Image (tube, rainbow, N blue to C red; front, side, top):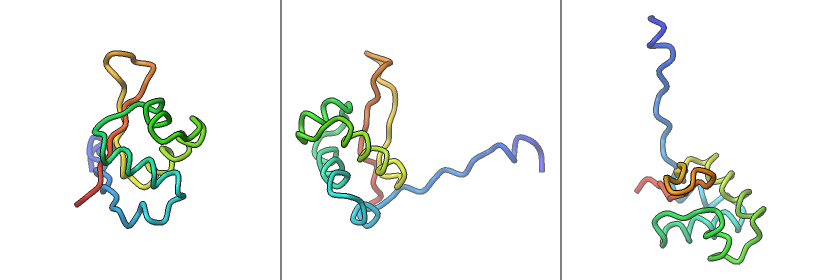
Amino acid sequence: MSASESLRQEPEERGTWDDVRELPPSAKLVAKVLEYNDTMTQQQIADETLLPSRTVRYALNRLEEENVIDSRFSFSDARKRLYSLEIES
């Protein structure tokens, strides 16, 4: 096995709604909001859900652990991250 082969990572499988079902209510709410709104920042999610920013951050972390959301840096403001739902059908 070469060094380049050992560094290659397998793409992680995307989560499903069954994975979300076991999460706290705040994570379920964030997932549903992202289902209806394509891409949002953490602040936009907090405004839409009326949840505190800390709760939204916790929910996003839980959703990331289950591989059901995708996050990337915003091109317009690199300090912000954009979140979108990535659930297998």
